[in-house]
Length: 265
Image (cartoon, rainbow, N blue to C red; front, side):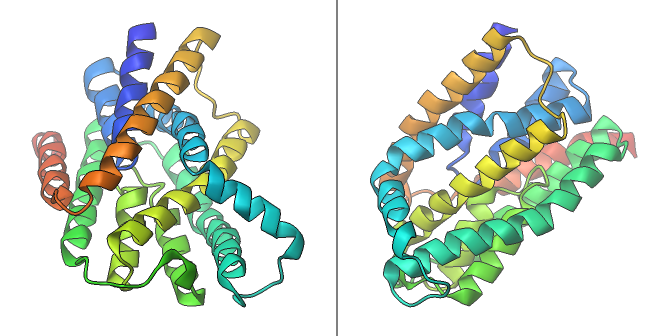
């Protein structure tokens, strides 16, 4: 179990910041190779985000600290750069919860054959890849330029990423690139908005009793592995963001994931 926890944590940490759906790929491994049920894999994959949440908090500690310091002066709206960013994070998180929570309950309470669930992941991966292909890095907008429309679109799309296979970072970054942000700003905004969203998801998972049935050691090891791998991969991804076409990898993974569904049908 400990080795499994390390493997799952590394997959989550490495793929969280790459637009190929860490959750979808972790679930594929859990169901296909280790015999997890759909609900077990879904809950465990969400729990693993604790490690990458901690990694994001450490990596963006200066930005997070600045946002907390600005809360005392926060006023509703998008008046200045810090106010805009705070409003963006607050309202995109609310939208994410409104969209994502019902989807999570549906996925959790609906019985799918393993092949069908993997097929959903495959379709979601392909859709994410095609969206990334459309998103060209031609923008010049910066993180401080966020507005209400950016908040609405990314908040809704981040909510859809609860569907395994839809990459949270991929779909939100692609949206921001389409909205004419440069790649560095799009990545930064996507990573920052993931912090409150993942925190809210972990709190919700606890309240719903969805924490996976693991030993304390397995939980600690999986989170630690995701944290270390997340820090390293985040550092690397900022350096290669403009040089790798992840959309192709995403589509290929999606096609592979669809193969079991074809045999099932």
